[in-house]
Image 1 (cartoon, rainbow, N blue to C red):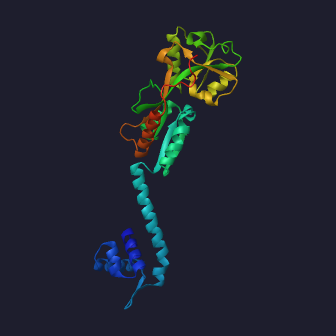
Image 2 (image 1 turned 90 degrees about the horizontal axis):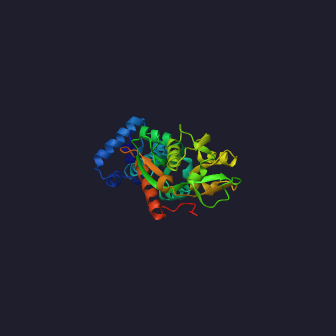
Length: 308
């Protein structure tokens, strides 16, 4: 017994007429009669009583009717699920993200994506940029949101979708907190809480490069991987740090953020969407396209902290 026979059985059971069932199935009546007969032989029971007034389901036919309908229903659901996944409007989408994506990007893109594609299940996995890129390349993740620019080698395609600036953060009791205008050079004699090179190589390299361009090498007092951890260490008085301005939305009031003048584009950062260049799933493509759409609808280049 196969799915075709199940459909044929249902057509006959619902019409109780081989001719009408054949018309519904767009097939000739003799092959339909033969197929039902084979089905009865496979099951070892007659499914229909063939009478002069027409057909009637036997007890065996009544017993399998509900099961046949369930099989037909799940078969159709299986077909729809496969079609939806192929079209990018169903299935599971594995999304890797850095912690900073939760500040501004996620609140914009996740509700919009779930509204537009309700049959796509989002599997969200927090990772570092390096981990996301490796898992994109290996096919473990379908799409990623990573810190940009990226200095390490990767075969993933990268497209910036949220632009930001690195700003200085310090405890409210810092001697620099009372100053409204700061340059990066002003932080020269402060201990720094820096991004760990083993896990946040890109941001660490950018901060070191910007400081060196300003004429000094930062004195690193402590390292951390996540921006939120860096903020906590700064709040604890371990030093100052350079962080994306977007993180101030969830920061403690005991922290002071200052935009830095005179550094040009050296402090420009972004979050980029990362995808595999040849095996990007359809749902990942739709996620990427929505990010681009939202980026175009926003006002790019507006730092969260305006220059003084």
